Length: 200
Image (cartoon, rainbow, N blue to C red; front, top):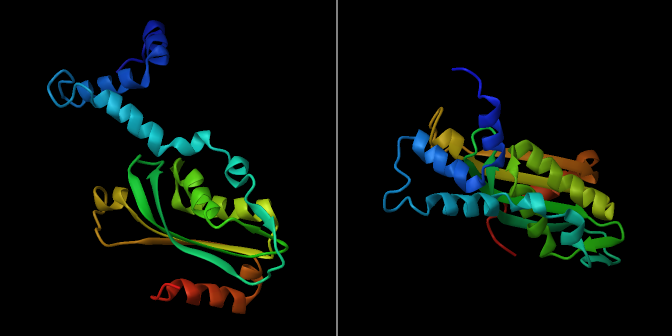
């Protein structure tokens, strides 16, 4: 297949996202004018913008006015945070739960901001490994705690719907910073609390 000519490249560059989705439907062998597909390019455009809205969000803005000076130096854990993301290799969803902990060093983060922080990074094209470290690094940079720990447990549709087609496999990734990395006791306490079946 010959490379696109200059006019074709210009046309592609100037096409709207909806135009591209319309063309995708055509190339899949569909009729974008049939009932049921007429508004699909518009819906796909809205969906992909929603699913990748993390690109337009800023961590510092999310944490704005939510960092507090507190004399507390015990572990803070927010567990079972549901997240949804898109695999950057196949643009198929992966989803699961995040468990986030930190040991403060004079500052704490408003509890509702931690799930929001997870969403900022999850709502981008991702790999699970990078998503895990980005969450940990953002907390580390924001409040300079004694340590941060993040565990993500997820199922990937790129493994479930295609490729190896394994329906019950899960991927677990972790990032440990500070005392969670250097102190076995702190790390073990975190892992034990995350594994507890009861909710506090």
